[in-house]
Amino acid sequence: MSVTARGASAAQIVLAALWLGAALLLAAAVAPAAFAVLPTRTLAGDLVGRVLPVVFWSGMAVFAAVMMLGVWTDARSRFKPRVLAAALGGASCMIAQLIVDAMIAKVRARIPGAVDALAATDPLRVAFGQLHLLSVVLLGIAMLSAAVTLYVAVRGLRAAP
Image 1 (tube, rainbow, N blue to C red):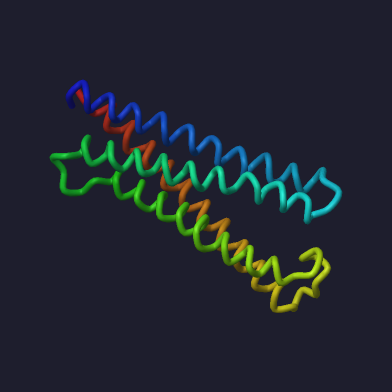
Image 2 (cartoon, one colour):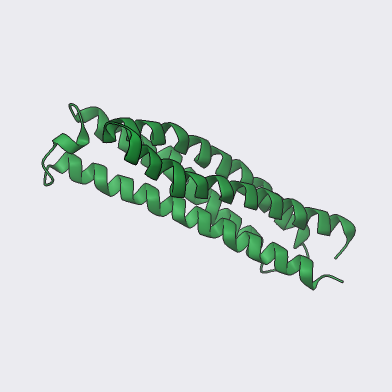
């Protein structure tokens, strides 16, 4: 592995680690804390809803950079695990932000007041819950993709002479 390829791998590690750390902070600390301390679930949801786009947009940028570095770093290989992991992570962030978030906003706009005020079987509440779950799953996929990227990049650095 050349010095420039090592640098590209190191850059991938830093980018993926920073983004994964931010995503973990949101999922493990910010969101639970918001729902625990704010007076209503609506306010907590609004807070988390303001932070999530930052995570998803930055994820798209980070995964795009990791992909470009991966194409360059793994130029000799047909199977590019870093590129594939980054593509999956970037696609997950893109779908969550550009599609699912828009769908959530449409459902939320049709709900007069708090989501929790609706009956558990109300179609709007059910739709909101399903879209929320999809958003969580997509964030999880992106986080797993970042972890795979980290693993492959670190392994590549260790295997290099």
